[in-house]
Length: 67
Image (tube, rainbow, N blue to C red; front, side, top):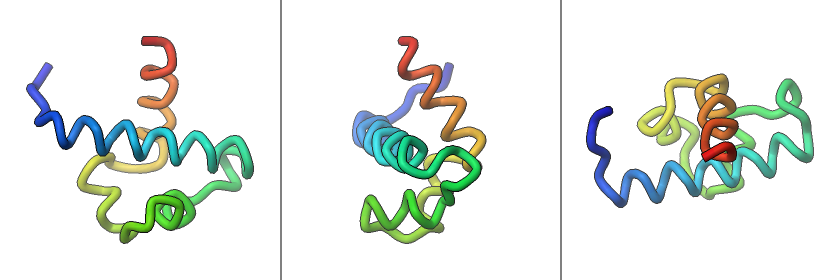
């Protein structure tokens, strides 16, 4: 597994928490990357630096919650 800078890892966890909140409110299919980004007060495009897509965010959310 590649090493990730601690600041990057903290931001990924912050994104996961915001995404989980949006998924709880709207459901996975009702949630959008734009809504997740708005919850973080960041540009939608910035999320793609941390995750490839919404599916990856959901996968990592599940993985993180199990860890």
